Length: 129
Image (cartoon, rainbow, N blue to C red; front, side, top):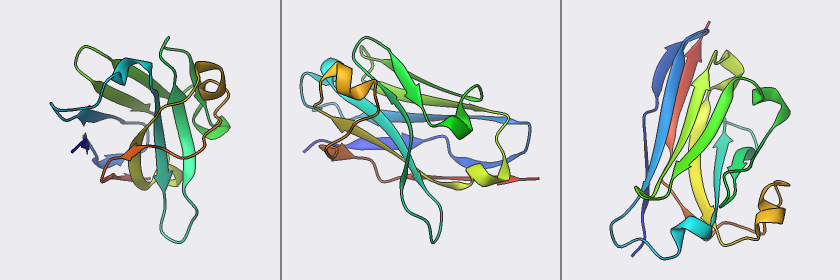
């Protein structure tokens, strides 16, 4: 049974920073290293939206509203995905989810998804002015 477990959420003020982590369970599927790893978020009453994707080569794509502030990265040896959130804004307040998808790199770096294979349970991020 594969699990993705997010951590690192919490409350932060505008201008602060937060780092989210997403760890795959020990019995995680293989090959984790070739999957497209994804961060999504969903605010109350809103649709879930893509935040950032990273392909197996470490190439990334971000939604426009987080470019220059958020950084997605991965450590394949640790089977862990990260999202560094710098200078968060109140509009970044949401439940953040990580996901893994068996997807070609060229589709991943374009932000194209057909639906993730695995999801984490989410971690709440609340940004106050």
